[in-house]
Length: 63
Image 1 (cartoon, rainbow, N blue to C red):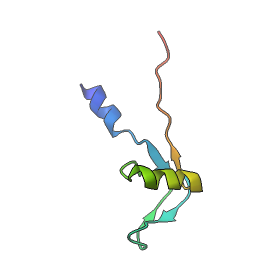
Image 2: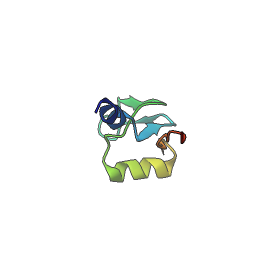
Image 3: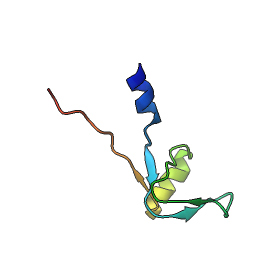
Image 4: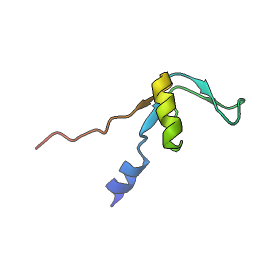
């Protein structure tokens, strides 16, 4: 169960190019910030603009 909680906290979208928040221009989202909580439409636009990238899920090597 701890592993499920850990996986749930992993970011799915992170900033790769700094940008200002759409609602609060004083807030800056810096490189490496987790923005996974943004709505899908906003994330899609940020990915398209090159500000955010999708984090690929890490897979464990077969044993």
